[in-house]
Image (cartoon, rainbow, N blue to C red):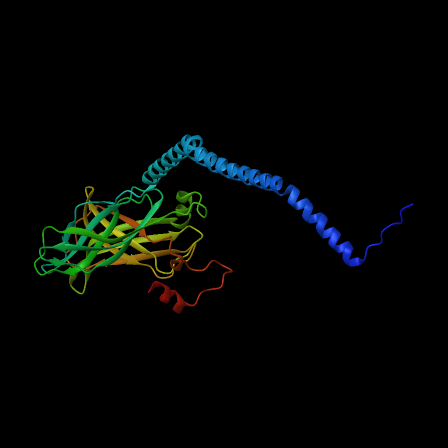
Length: 308
């Protein structure tokens, strides 16, 4: 019986290294071929994915993107049409009338109409005659308000002009916020709930030997809102034709209060047979309101600052 051969540790390591080297030498060509084939397959896969991506983008999704772009354009057209349909329409102004007070002073009068139901306009305006213009004044007109009087009163004109023109500048539109005001007509009616009674005009009032005109009327604030200084435009008519205009500021008219107002008409009093009173209050301006009962009253100085 042959005795087993005992190998030293160094010989065992050499034998293991030899066997591994022999394995690599024997299988290296095959492993190389397998690696090349794997790399070729990976390259083919990447090239195929790239070709598919171009094909999908350029052919498959072409018609989808065309349809998507078309829908976007149609949406823009519809949005433009909606925007145009809801945009504010221009204000309409009447011709200007000039009412002489005497040989050197006159009142200027025009009517402005806002055909928009959802838009309030604020602006500046002035009257021009010859080469002269009146002072520039601030104005506003509420949504759907018609025949709103615009005036320049007791203007020193020298010779009273026969004609004049109205110029409106710095026009700013503000749309009604329907989230806060769902029904503007009722909202406005609640705030402009004035009742006018005993309206009269006397063109032959004697004061210190002079004859003047006098308008008298009683106003009741029948709504729930009081106002610091509500303005009322007074327009005189003769047979439905405007022959004179003036205004009255009523200080601190509280809700539910009734007040009798007298307005003297200095200068040549016009001959009129009808008188109409128009409130001129920017009800969108929170500073025009007196505080409701139970509310803390704001500092008057702060209210003046806001108006400035």
